[in-house]
Length: 178
Image (cartoon, rainbow, N blue to C red; front, side, top):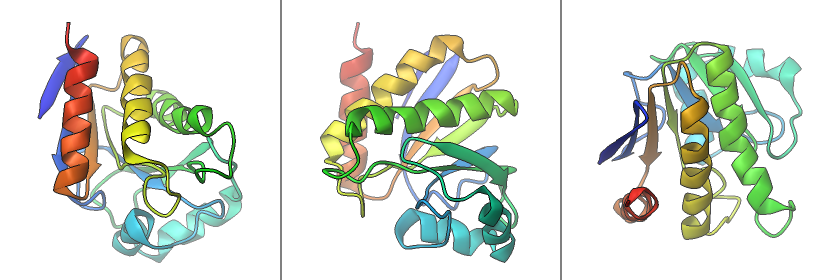
């Protein structure tokens, strides 16, 4: 599913964040030390190879809500933008920290003239952020940023399960209904 808003395509797809060859940047739902882990972060590090971990080392640690950028290494993407989402119930204010991840990632994309970016559902896995709430925050933040984007023309949300995709599609439809 996709929607065009102010010349920017926002799309929701089911897939693997580490296998998005047609976007310039993928977002890594990182840990504070930017090291390989499980889930989407593990898949990105595994596909990128050991050079990604090496490049990340001097950039760490980062705080919840922050984002940093590296090269894509063995990924088909030129860049990886690493965001540390909040651990739900621990890092507060969780809603603002999660919104900051999406905002900072898009700001970095603009700074580096990135035309397309793919996001996973940040903080909804190991960090236990409720999916519906996280989806609403992610999409509202991105929609607020769209009018300010000069370079970014495609924003993809890559969801791992059909049920996650359903939540993202329903939320995008609700938020863009006019």
